[in-house]
Image (cartoon, rainbow, N blue to C red; front, side, top):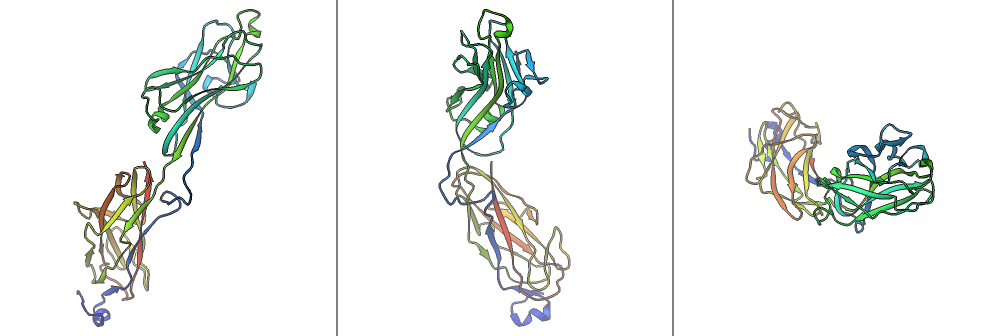
Length: 330
């Protein structure tokens, strides 16, 4: 039933895709070209579970220390030390990040105060990364809540830039001791009400290009297959981070619509994608599926499409549709 003449289209119930199956790039959400230079952003993460050390036994307003230090609520909930001349400390697990980009700094903050004017250093920050604890510089509080912090431009364990895996595994906490060694215990309290970290990062730029942008599948017969070749298209990662690329198709419009399906049928077609050196093994549907995993920055992947016409179709009106590629930072 293959036809080569336009005059034979109607008689043989074949059709010609006069336009093209147009490949377009998704923009706006996860695949975009920034209109302006990307600027640094920040992410705040607070405690959500106890960490490896729960050394501060005195807790007010909450059952657990991490709960008391997850909110900036002054003396409503806090942990404190008033009876021990030695240091006591807690470590807390933190919320996981859900962003991507290049990390330039991680700073741990504790918000603390003392009941009386201190006569000694009584507060410090503490973190745990890659199984090792690191402390800031101990300092004296005041009798009003204030923030005390330690900044890390790099991971102190590796001396290299922080990774998101390290941030997600990071524990942060506070170390306290009584603010003075004389007087009643109620006058020696050092309190901490809030612990959190701030991650400074440059957001990842997810930007892809694909050439060429169209393909004309030409004249097709019922159940006929036309493929572009596995090197026809080239998708390039123009962004600042490695990406996964997903692919999604659409129904073909023009006259009676051809539905994109998983099997052939009347006015229902199938579409497969494949990568260079492979086969057309990736079924394209109206739900996004992975075309290419872990495409490195500046790397290019060649690929192609294979379209199978419906087993039967109703009209010979030219059809057109689209395929969308989307970049997702990893």
